Amino acid sequence: MTLSSYAQGLLAVTIATVALSTAGLMTRLVAIDGPTLLFLRGAIASVFLLVCLLASARGRVFADFARLGWSGLVICATSAACAMLFIGALYTTSVAHVAIIFATCPFVSAGLAFLILGERPSRSALVASGVALAGVLVMIGSGEEGTLAGDALAFAMTFMVALWTVLVRRHPDKPALPSTIVSCLMSAAVALPLASPLAVSSHDLLVVLVFGVFAFSLGFLLLTIGSRYLPPVESALIGALDAPLAPFWVWLFVGDTPADTTLIGGVIVLAAVCIHILSARWTAAGSVAPADN
Image (cartoon, rainbow, N blue to C red; front, side, top):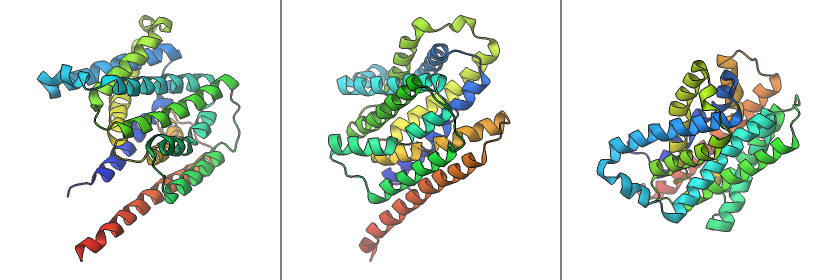
């Protein structure tokens, strides 16, 4: 059975979200400052993905990078900004505040997609986004104070993620691997002057190595691929799964028991995303049914 482009996009973005949701767990397992973590993560990911590109493209490596063009470099820079702002937000405000601010991403994506692409979001996507936002509000009902600077970084990250999904949707011809490699190199280069990679312990380096390869590298690559086939509002909606998944990984590996509000809100977010995906599938099936008669 061959999956449609839309189904491939859903699968890729969902797997990417699960992988990238482990970022909060990584920050709990290491004692590294933000710039050093950003540098190591970007450097490790870029080296790993470059090896993958060399193995798969062989004689087409330089041609693939050349295909990026100026629009591709803008996408890379936007992606790098997302990573830098995300790490900065995690280190300067509460995880709860980052979650609630990022939960507005589907609405920002919908607005940008309409302005830049002329795409009107489906009613079901907007309703599901609203339900997901309500779920995140329930999750932080126990209250956790943030900081003005950290919240500003989270807002900037949310806008940049929304812009990135729209740009990837607008330029689906840009090669995913080179784009992700350049993005990782950009974030690592910006962080390097403030980083202290030689002071990192072997334990922390191993943790960042594992997460850099299996979570960040593959997660961002799949997100880049999947976002080509989905409306930006839907990519952002699936990304809202990060809110319940992040505390789940911390509970599973560190043992921190989430509050009841986190569990209830997480179920609401998960239900909103799942119902929307099923609704989209039923709509697609209904639209092709007459052709089979």
